[in-house]
Image 1 (cartoon, rainbow, N blue to C red):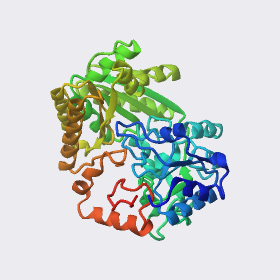
Image 2 (image 1 turned 180 degrees about the vertical axis):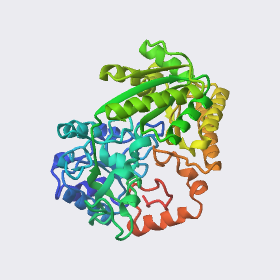
Image 3 (image 1 turned 30 degrees about the vertical axis):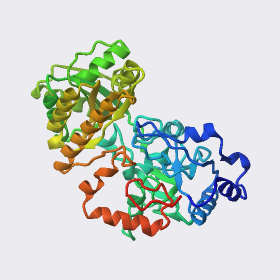
Image 4 (image 1 turned 180 degrees about the horizontal axis):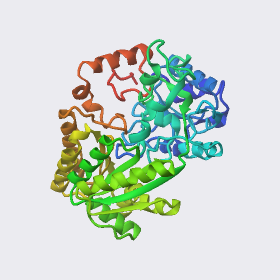
Length: 464
């Protein structure tokens, strides 16, 4: 870093209030890590902008002083995206948390980046609307766009990139641009929404998002289906999708994870591969979908299936899936969770999950496998003693094996968690010559390499 901390602060408090600029040790520590197992690193300064104009001026200062900048939402990321390994300035967007406009007739909403999905859905409920992307954590919408988040509802509604109609972005030099419009489609110019969503703060800082929203379904039915094998369960999902049944969620939880859930929640579910499903629509249509689904499940050796329409019962049924990470964490006190994340073509999913389970058993670390099986994305949860180098090495080797397995089958090293630092080493293997195109885009928009440097792509480090 070419400028001292005092110099940075001196330039920032020209236009920010003193309480918007912090060098406090505790504040810096809170912004030195995310939810991942990756090593922490302190920012030099944390700033709390209130407007896009604030962010523009912050970026102008950082660019002039050649100081690294890392955008920060809630720190719920899982691959080290927000860890400032080059120190510098962390921009915390928690004060930019306004829902600016609900355009119910257009099924659109405008929000600032610090708005969380729970906060948004609470407001949208007044209009009979909801926002579809559910990554599990109550992440900020700015962070979700930065990592192209998805989750349990992707099979029906798509990923974060599919919901973004427009972004207000502050570039490295402080320039403010818009990447889209309010129109449902456009054939004008490059697809900048697609470029910036998933860029993980390496190309710009989001200061406003215009997002698609949906009408709350008239009826919802949830189901839990038990199978003798993972292969049976995944093949049942494939058949459901091929039949055109409009399923809203479909999640796989393996037998080891079901055992962990039973210990944590006091349930007595069968210790076998289990699908958790959800269907949405009108009452008559749902009844037909449920009957058709039962027939398909029976064709794939389903041993037990339970449907729930009551809201309380549905919530309880889904708790097994939603609380799985907490079940492992509470069951292995003192250990840190590593969450892997690969995505393969649906036709490859069953074998990929079987391979992952076999490799996980071989390293003798506690963990389980779950997945958004409707879109080919699955995770392994591993509990690691971070003070034990042998356990950490085992976990990293396991992670690499399932990543390479996915890449060999034309899948991806990350289905939804993003690249950050954890998946950076696989970028060349996945993208080939296209990685050089990404590097050129990065340098064109950020020639001083100040925006979240050395995440996704490796550019020569800033001199300190």
